[in-house]
Length: 579
Image (cartoon, rainbow, N blue to C red; front, top):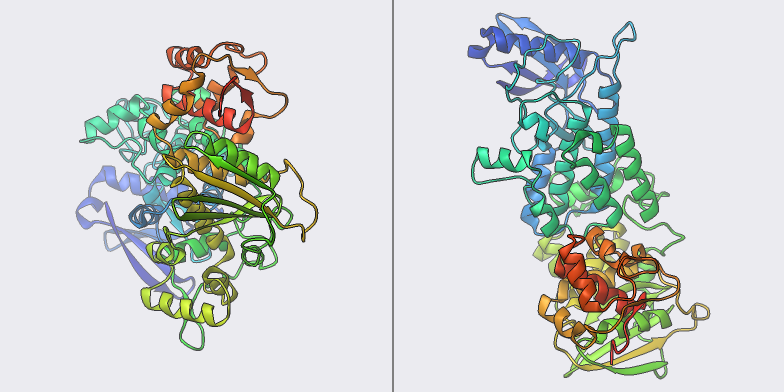
């Protein structure tokens, strides 16, 4: 419909000029849509909405002068993130979606000069219409196909308006839309960023529309295992087929995301967003006086506050402090046991309960995995085979060049520092990004040990940071172990692990909550049936697995994984398990 130019204004500085294509400017329908967009956008004044500065007609050309946004669209961010092969930073996404929902709440609640609701529905909430500023702020734009009481209804019954792949079911059917239709679109955006897969994409437009109308979430369910349960619930509520069953408003959905962030200990400031976009090479890096590229700190960044996605100081020390923790305390192990393929997860849970500060070592056939524990939290995992080196992960995430990596490795060795510690101390890498990469590295290295290995497990305890607190664990440690187990276990592995207890009765243990195990919603539903008062309490493992599948509580694999994790963690018991 239009082309956009960057321009300089005497009054507004740099602006974006949107000009309707000359052939369309003479078309009455397109002209009417242009004036509708101008009238609506001119009424909106919100920090997360692209501001309209001026509009009109010059020599038969229709134009708008809009606020210039220097950063990328979310469509470009999504493409770059998918290409990187690394999971999208979840706290960054949550922060961006909170701002987008703040903008939509303002839009949906907007009133005219007399206080009459404008009843605006954007109808085109998609990654291409959401932009990022250089300070990591969200800007919603393109109100070209809004539905509002302030404009003449220009969409005929059954006519389709919106972006295919980002419509709500009712919108794809040409039915009446509402603010909850925009929330469905936000749910699609979140699902795609969390899975890095198109949610409803089919072989052609008709198949995409069909998947949209039927709310086919098969792609989402196949790729969402790493998504925290609370966040998964928010996305799935937004993606419900019946609008009445979605969030009541953008404000309610926004509040749900804030609760998820608060419970996870994530801060909500824009510095993390800027660093993440710089890591994807979508925002420029600053150069210091020596010509080295460094991550730019945004103007509104407060270095005294925890970065978005990083743990608070009460939950975990800074990553530099963590990297200074001892690799292996002196002395003999306080616990030593042989492990088999199907008993290792149970023994790992037991080992973590015994270790507040120290190391859990796994050895098998000359290979060694050393898992560092610091204040009850998994710090990192060191593998003797050198799998998943941090330097390679930094390169894959486009955070460092091969030449810079070689220089950093040499400098870190001369300084007697680990690579990550050195990069953070030199401000070449943000602590929060390093923490995310080390978590991914730990999960990947742990996952390699769940399979067919046999060997020895040893626990070394360091008493220098205070006495061991048996049983106390940071939630992130459990999540890391379960993520690694999910990554390393196959259907055949689970079948073998449960084979000896398939006919044993499942009994709930005292205390403990299934939500503490970082399981998916279907897995939690399957597990709850075996807990005290559950529908299948006291039945055999085999019966529970068959029933949850027959009743469509979860898939067979999900039910098996939930029972295996709960048995390994001691949340439920089955006589003979782990022998």
